[in-house]
Every structure is written in structure tokens, then in C-alpha cells.
Length: 199
Image (cartoon, rainbow, N blue to C red; front, side):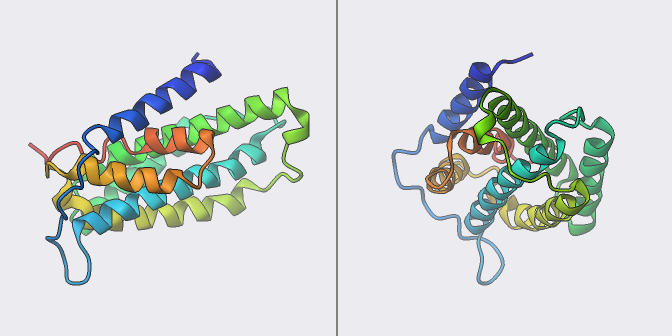
């Protein structure tokens, strides 16, 4: 089991990995449908990933003190399977989508574990209310639907040499409004976005 320090270090290393090669202004990734571009898709992926990490706070609050496990393998598998099906329907690489959604789930788990540890150690930081998971899940479903659409737009950028720097630039801008827990989760959630075109 990875401790808090290990989790934070892993997240920090992922963010640093995203920043590699970010010194020069990337060339715009402009191929795409009218009014949008693959770069816009990457930016949207980052925004949605940050939203999902933040919604994870509510998931953690719903589980805190109940004895419920942070991980739910059956539900997680169903989420990945649904994303794969949606991607196939919309003409997005389903394997790529599944990897990214799995990363999103891992990032959410990281946030939940970090917050539950914090709330256990510092009772004064505990949430005042416990939301119902049934009310939180529609938010996650909406983000998942929008993520597939963003990945469709971002698809042409996937194997472009500018993908890592464009993604990193968007992540750095998004991270400015996040605390350390959510910055680390954002880095974890994006690790498979620029993994090259399918072989």
C-alpha cells in the first residue's frame, strides 16, 4: 500500500513528466472540425479531468466513516466498459479511451484516499455533510460522456509531437486553481492521453 508521501510523489512525477519539453511554445494543432481543433480537444480533456478529480471529493465524503471501500471493482469495470462502448459508437479508439478512463478512476481513487487520510488525521477538516452517491454519480456520468467527445476532437493530436507540450501547457494552467491533492490527481489522470496512434 502506497502511503501519502508515495502518492504525492507519484503524482508530482507525473506532472513533471507532462512538463517535459514544455519550454518552447508549441506549434498549434489546427487540423480538426470547423471552429475547433485537436488542441481544443486536449484542453477540454484537461478541464474534464480536473472536474472529475474535484467531484471525487463528494465521493470521498459519501464514503467517509461508513466503512465502504474506496475502490469498487465492479462499478469501475462497468464505467470503463461503457466508455469503451461509447467510444466505439462515436468512432474513437476504444482501447485508448479505456486506458484514459482507467487513469481517471485511478486519479479519483488517489483523491479519495488522500482526503480520507486527511479527514481521519484532522477532524476539523472533515466535510460537514455526507452526500448520497446516487446524487454524485450523474455528475461523473456527464463528465464521462463529455470526455469521449473531447477525445474524439483530440484524437488527431494523439501522435503529434506537440501533444505532450500542448497537454502540459493546458495542465499547468488548470493546476493554478487546484490544491496539491487535485494537482497530483490531474497529473495521474492524463498519463495516457498522448500515447501515440493505434498500431
